[in-house]
Length: 213
Image (tube, rainbow, N blue to C red; front, side, top):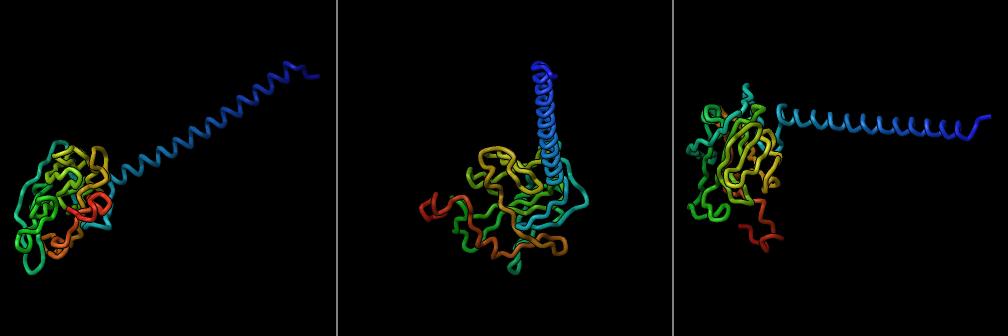
């Protein structure tokens, strides 16, 4: 006949074994989730992410920005309703700044800006990204590349250069807005109308009483 002590010991042993199995399941489940997360992160930063909102022209090189790479300002050319940015300037400088100025030059694109700041850069996946050069919450218009990230000079907010996903800082929800482009010959090409009609996202009706700045 099994004594009370033996029953207690058997119960305790079975209970501990069951708890160990549960802990192992939880551990391996968390491990698999973490592994998937790392895989997704690596893919997003080094894979050929393609943007639905922007352009998807890839260069053969995938640059590594071990040091701060600052903007080089170039002049935007507008001909026959098309804004053109030379690819060579982007390849050579990695990140360029330019401005669109349409109409009579009196339209305010954002705040007191009577020009639309734009930039183009080569992401760490080799994709050429064309976007506004505006950090909308802080009004910053200058950026640089460092490590895997695009960084706002004004506030220090960082976004992944591959897909402009927010990494850290006060303005992560409003990265520079990608612009759809085509590559024609040696230029990135954007219809002038898209630039002339651009509207900021940050000041919604709720925040500005119906008047976007």
